[in-house]
Image: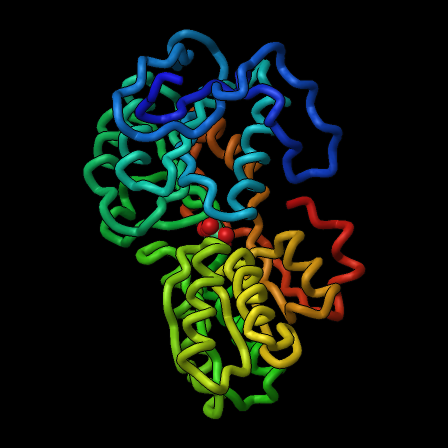
Length: 351
Ligand code: AHR
């Protein structure tokens, strides 16, 4: 297959890999004869051939360029499915141009520049890290293309360069996780922290929320180690293995996402301990796998982070295209779940 800079793909050509989004709904019919590699993520080397994307001027549809981070977690796959599914259900009014940046900021920036060249109506993306966006966001502004930050934020210096952020409150999530850990340990014990991607707002703010809540409310709980697992299950497992070798006493793990928590569960089992019992485990996201682990007694809690943002993203994009103003931060409404809720809630999980 020819290498491309980015897998820029019209949603209409996504092929049979397109999954249902977050709402409980029937799966869409597979579009005709789209080869599997059409939607495959491609290595970032040669510049992409200019994709045959519709420009804003070419039709009346809402043309949205979405530069996804990559596929680091089950949560992110859920978000991608939701965005693609929603656009596929609304092809009469929406054209989605989707890029997969394969975890690299430089690829997100290239994708955004491609979207500017295409003249899309609105650009939406989850910034993989908080810093380094000033130049490209300024280019969006100069091109008159409004930007929606989806599920993560950028640093304060860029506050005037985007239209809105649609995301969860990560500080709140971290604080909720701390309270679950505080209850589980009855206010006393040693905790390790598996952090998300270095420099990501989801990691920085969950850490801030968790560490501050522990410091303020649980003086006898000590965070003995904190290291990045990059939001992936594989690295979550690896880092947990090294924590288990370094520390004799670990009473609880706070993982900045459920994928890393699930990785930690594997490491704890392999070390001959019982996850959820010998070592309590709390994550963030609320993915199905976390609920299954809670039902199995191997995980103790998760703080939801809603990835089902498609409807809000496209509705907001339509408003921005129409010149309306929108709130600077559109905050998701998330829940907190422990083992006690897991069995009843599991059938409701859509991601
Ligand atoms: O920005 C949201 C975070 O990013 C989710 O918690 C995580 O799973 C994802 O990778």
